[in-house]
Image 1 (cartoon, one colour):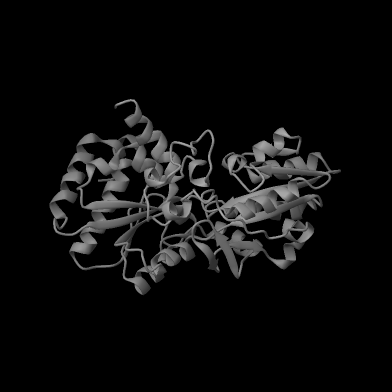
Image 2: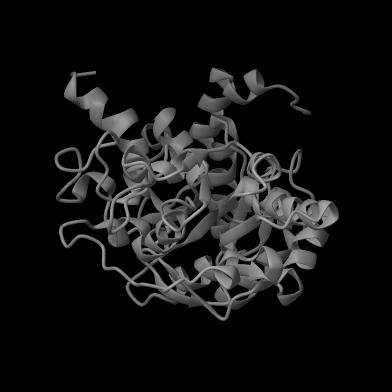
Length: 372
């Protein structure tokens, strides 16, 4: 049956039948651990209460698929040091404005008079640069492969227009090295993955074949509606029941097997892979992030500004790393719901709506607090 509309992916009867099929097929003597890599999946799981529709022996582990959540404090401070240099207009997306660094958040620095502006698109930053030729405009670029193409296309546009005062501070990261780092962790047991829908719409399904081949873990690329996620979990259960480890694409209505070719072409033209990049909670991961190619150095903030490359340890009481790796659930962190809330985040996982802690806080913690 072909499904075209969102309502069909929230159909109560289809959801009930899928949940029942999962319960019928699971091995009652085995505890399954499936990781949803994408923060959007984490948000949907909490929002729709999907864990309550699953057997007790299926545990959903929340992965590092929220780009704001994996940004280390030192990298935030590097960006803010640029923001405070003379004649700079610093631009950032909404969630980034509230990410805590060692010297505060961008919002806090803006309140002290630093020219930091909220944008909705990389092209917004380029327009600011065109409108203010006497200022240096810096884009704090962030995200997985989902948003890297828009940054790349903006840089290509800056070159086309010969905009001399526009610079990009790239914090784009790659999904496959993060999955490998999790699987290489000696204390981590994952039986299968819910592959990220947004990232996969750009890179396609094929790149995950190396993960499945080398680690023997099934991976199902999933959409974001309740039925999407339940169908994807059912596909993982079926693979395990049949002794298979394959890449399957539940989200085929959006994700092409070979990816978005024009987007990949733009990324490859502008970016190259960094030798190493630090991830919050996961440490240094090789070949895991993107930087501008040398031929685009004119627009590279790390070339045109002095960036110290500081490394700052998270607050001792914060347990973001353990939550990111799936070792702890959000509510098991000592600061959760007390010192650390969405209004006053201590860790980055409480900033973005796709962060595991913020999603749990809004859709589970608050409901429990009012007795729902």
